[in-house]
Length: 318
Image (cartoon, rainbow, N blue to C red; front, side, top):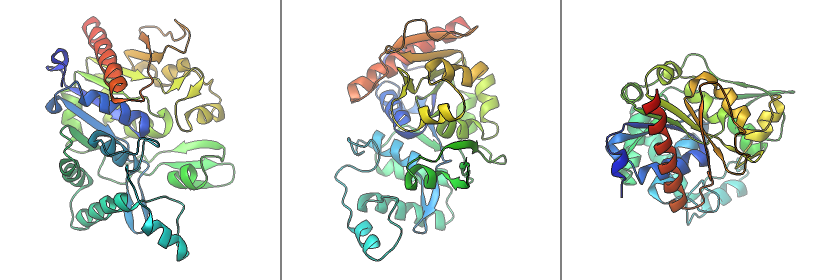
């Protein structure tokens, strides 16, 4: 059931990973689908077994469809692993765990891409098959690979993140400089009332989206309010390598450091109740402190309602 309070707002959410999928799930419970767009990071995408794998798109899709693995937050519920087991038995690459149900989606995506359809068109087809009503858009139809520079070598993102279990220390995150947004993304940003930056990793989930021309410029100039939700809670990352990356970049592992990193892009910032009151401040930045942990659909709805309500307050004060 949508919340009529938000029925006249155009909402865009920039998302990646499990944190992004959870906030997106909360938003779908309160915002009419024709008013909601989720723009998803594709910097994690890579080719594996000859297939185009889109981990963030799939995590958001599975979560919104209610078929995500509830224990991991990614992959499919009720998954089986016969194909992966056979690949391993045959001596093939088994470090990236593709389950049988997941593989069915990747084969379908590969088929439509091979037929000449864009990633945006394929994603629309897949979300319709999963009965996901809101717009789910890749940030670009072009490949936009995130690369991780370590002390010893340059690694593709998934090699660093999955095969190496994000253990090699990161010297720099490299993003491509020639990627453009799609004709589907730009009108959604042009008409957005509020842009939400999900509690995703700022460096490898959100930066790749903002790096796509002209998304950062549009987010800076057009919405009534831009609100970010901190992925750092009580000095720790809720999930994944955000805290480790911050340490390796010489940043304090705090919500304040996340707010500072986004800087003038933001009008409002949401941080968790595990952090002290007033611990995030910046000139001209409005803040909200609440319980941002979202283990259940009910909690996701609550956080989405509080964040959007805050966004309305910030927008009205601009």
